[in-house]
Length: 82
Length: 455
Image 1: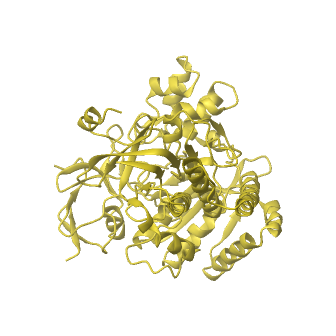
Image 2 (image 1 turned 90 degrees about the vertical axis):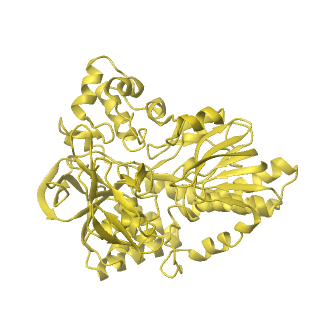
Image 3 (image 1 turned 60 degrees about the horizontal axis):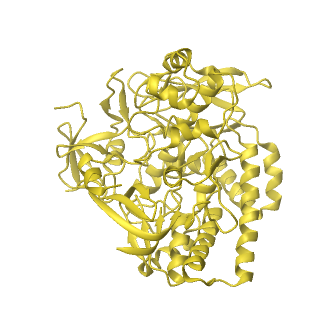
């Protein structure tokens, strides 16, 4: 099944899609909060420049959601979620 | 392994340069951060047929010749040493350091959206115009259902029509300039006029309102954008007739910023272009002032894909001539390419003059408006650094942390440079931009990879 899991929720993806795109397609607009203002962040530049979309994939932290191709069974979470 | 040429970037310029140099018999390595070739302009999804893509035939022709060379996708270049050694990270998840040696380097690293800060621009749902388009082209996703497109430049048109064709409702295109004179200059460029007319038809078909002389002055929402405040600029440039437009996405861009990391690392001469961007200076053969370092495409000044293709081809020819001692192209062919470059560059210059960055954006920042998204430095924080005596962007950066975060000033560099110059009461210059554009390490790199890489 072409699905990843975000915060316990199953999120489908199209082969070749980035994790960030799959989350956006599922209506998930943000997945981390900032250190100072605790502001929500998701995709901004969409092309690997801004690092707003940092995400943890299968316990590997600080990946850019817009750059990482989704793979079946990926478990993704925001960097703040244990 | 030592190659003749390392080409950095597989967009229009880099593809043309690499294929041209390889066709002339050189051993070429083409490094690109992307998963698929094409850069931003030819960005496409995994099952792309090219049917709805502009100028796909040119891309397909170049892509089909990649077998002539060593194509290295998913390689993020973080440093280039003189000599030359290109240091890159390969792979997105389990990244590995890679070194590629070459006798010459062609920099075709492209550009990213130029962003300006405004109240609410850090809300999720606010995307760069290029980012919203990349999601459509590369991932078949519209970032939301009701989109406002804003900023300045002709690029807003394909962004808006692409989103509409992909199924989003585009609530409006708000162009900060009133580029009426520019339309007249299109008569000298029939292909561009046809392209522009095509967007006009698509705007009408999807009932997308287009408003020149209008800006988004604020994005509003709780956890994500829910509406934007749009205003008309009066003759003095003051925002009037404010109105609220509901949307779940704002796609906003004010032109582009070329990626100058590698030219600055190698000591190439740079200057400020007509659009206010820092660019690499090249001669008629696309040579920088550093021997055997060439630049093509947006690296030498934002000008679009057609110009990038020509510059790439010229750079590939020049590198081949330098390394083999004889020109692979006839003088007539070089003259044809040079004339085409001149014509396209003139068009780009006219476009930049018609779509300048509106200079009113600074006045709309509030004390608590973020300038630097990564380090969460506000306008007040930047002003405080100036009050402490910082008079240049580098000093402001050290005191306020503006531009010190993950993106290393890529997003806020232009704005921070302009704000610093304004706060210290002087005109911005190239050093202001260089101060936030120098990145000796252009990608996040593990310390152990630096320790073993000897850059």
